[in-house]
Image (cartoon, rainbow, N blue to C red):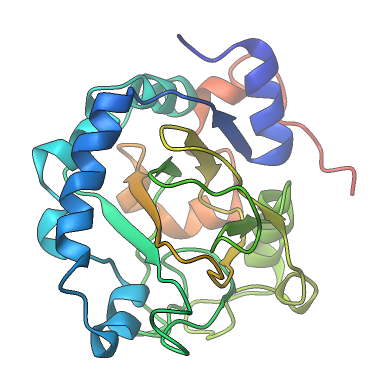
Amino acid sequence: MPLTPEEKDTFKHDGVLTRRALVAPALVQRATSLVGTWYRDLKASDIPAYSQRTFAPELGSHPDILALYRETDAAELATDLLGDTLPVTTAQIQIRVPESEFPDAQPEKAMHVDGVSCPHLDPRELRTFSLLVGVILSDVSSAQDGALHYRPAGHHTMADWFRTQWSLGMTEQVPPEVDHERGVPLLGAPGDVLLMHHLIPHSVGRNLTPFPRVMAYFRVSHPDHPRRRLEALRDPWLDYPPLTATSQPAVDKE
């Protein structure tokens, strides 16, 4: 089912939209079975590196993982927002491990925007995209379940900061007023899907449950994004022509 006008308005203002139960249980089960098998051999010493990039890197292009995007309405919803997209060929699997199982192995992630001034990259290198599509693969009923935290409408703040204060090579990922925020936790059930503008600043909390929190993320780009990464940081709607075709983008009222 395509996005409704109301959903598009919500996305323009908040930069975030959630579709509940979008992914069929059978697809979720196939993906979680793969990740669960991989997780059994996880070593504490590997967690910091996986947390910076992706867990289970060898599963990123597995058909059962890609099916969470390709064989659901998630791809259609991405096209509703971007108009056209580059092919999605890999997924990022992010796990927040239980602190009871791996004490001190995975501290909270600070507020950031993906692909900009990453600690493990040269600060002059950009690995940006247009839209983050996240599929929840484990129950996240509380902020203490290792939930993603995001700042609604933060794409307006970040675009202004990138346009007026930030320059390529800076190591700061977000402005100070955003860095000190906690954000809104993403809560949901397996099969729920998050659509989040790339410019939405977000962090990740600690997992105080006995079970790993698992998400599969798909980084979706407008076909023109790779040649205009800097411009897209400064203009939040450059990669979203369907949202600007008939009306002006919503103004942040914060």
